[in-house]
Image (cartoon, rainbow, N blue to C red; front, side, top):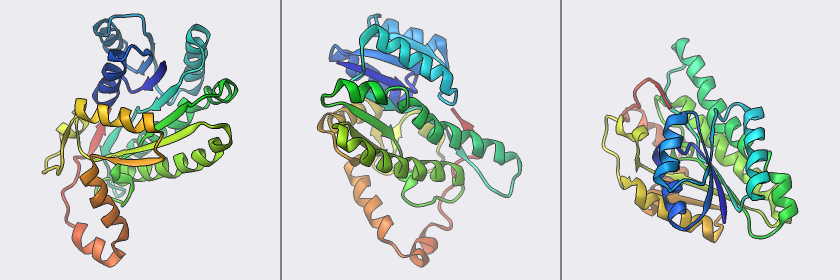
Length: 254
């Protein structure tokens, strides 16, 4: 099996790489920090392909995908996991640059990850997967997180469209919307995080969902129940309950 993962140098991406490597999978690992990628590859026994690049750089991703497929063939699974988080407030002009960075990475970067692989995966056939890591933050807009919530809502809608496009070719598109997972990204949150899940346990659950080819799932599952409830709340009640909710700290986390 061959799996290509972006955002592989830390957090969910790193945990997924560790999980799949333990299953004997050949990995393509993408992240901006070359030294972290190299260290991860060594920990995983070497032999995996490392591509230090930014997912907003579509030509670099195209070249990486081409190299991976020349060496190993079309991947069985492509996981667009790379993402950045930020607390943003529209009233601050300085936050506009952060807003663009979040959208470029979390939405455009996802499409740029999948694009070079789709023709080869169509031609190869079989039970292949395109996996996008979204977030429960994309289900309802959270105060103080305009950019992050918007990017994850866009990712969810994009993945749904892609799922319909890929259906005739037998390619499963899997949307995973994590709740709170123990990663460097959540470590800075100054508030209680219900159902917080250790990242290694999260990775095994993600992999199980990917293996089943589910169209959409929230992990951990109790957060999925909460998410469904939030989706059903009328705006007036949602506004009353969340207007004073704790905010993510302003500033970009990559």
